[in-house]
Amino acid sequence: MPISPNFTSVLSKDWEINFTQCTPTGFLKYTDLCNILQLTAAAHSEVGGISFYDMQEFHQAWVLSRMRVEVHALPKWQDVVTVKTWINSLENSRSVRALEMYVNGKKIVGCETYWAVFNTQLRRPEALALPYEHFELFPENRATEEGFSKININHEKEAVFEKTVYLSDLDIVNHVNNVKYLEWCLDHVDPKRIMKQEVKSFEMNFMKELSLQDNVVIHESEDDDHTTATFSITKGEKTCFALELHWK
Image (cartoon, rainbow, N blue to C red; front, top):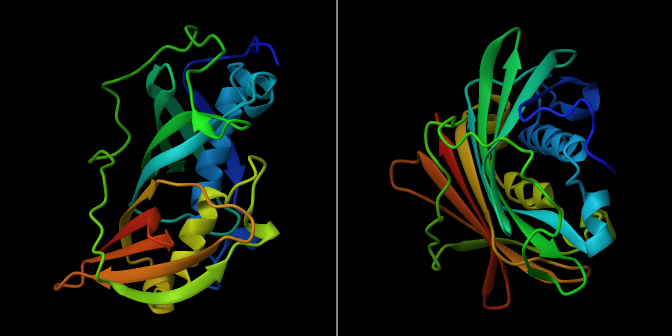
């Protein structure tokens, strides 16, 4: 798709929260929060001519490598949220994108994401084949108080669940959708903590892709003062994903 005549380097998009996206309390699920953020990023890439459809001409796609989300509050059913997004950096095969969510003009979520260009045939990173110079970059305009980081994994932590990858876990790039990793881990968190919105922030590292019928193990550990929980997902000896939850 060509660059849209309505393209701007900063995009704002409204979303109405529907009941399928909510927990029994009526507030947005953390997984659906991530979905809305990523759909907004995708919408910006579409009007900017670097969408999945555009990139597939060169067998390329954007894949998420790291993501940090800071949550001040969650929207509830029927709220209309505004998500604002812009790019901090974009060079060769890597990009850092910022996202913010607002309700009635008040910022409730900040997010920083790190993306890589992935060749969907060769299954490896490579330089973006499309022009992107029309995107103005905003390196100083950060959406989060802290940047994303490499999560320290405790390899002695407890194994809590074994999982086989099913077709419902895969996305259009033919690997496990990044939100699925978060969903698998949150299923092993005390539901009361989720329902009470005790998550202050969470950070995810995506290290190796998972495919259909892969067998994985989910591990969990918590620090001594119970303010941080860390999860990892392993396939054999290799860690594929790490999640760090910070509690309020």
